[in-house]
Length: 149
Image (cartoon, rainbow, N blue to C red):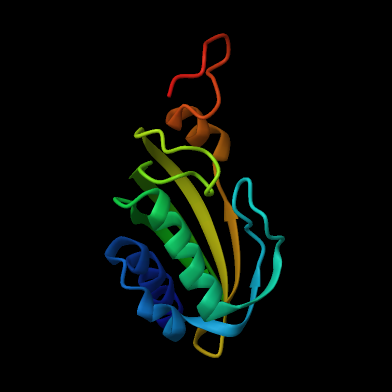
């Protein structure tokens, strides 16, 4: 169980350090992604794990160069690891390459679930507060107020 938790810790550290070379060591080639990006152009499903994890990290870091993730709690049972993750960042790059950078920061909590197979992350789910994040970034207006950018 501890080895599976270590994989998730390494996944988080990859985003924090921008050392994306670890993607090839932590993700299975046969990877199933359930957590598509907000406004995403790709659908959930099978992916080449190392390439997908690296591309997801590059995509987020391009939008939020100061992105920081920290694990608040983690539990593992069988082949599943679940982590509650606090995430912060400042939007300095175009959101999803479509919406101009807002220069605003966000702070949110997410849960990430992984299935581990043969010592690699093989499947991923996430529960995110995308609405809260978009409100903090000023991408959508607060109810009853104007959009501020």
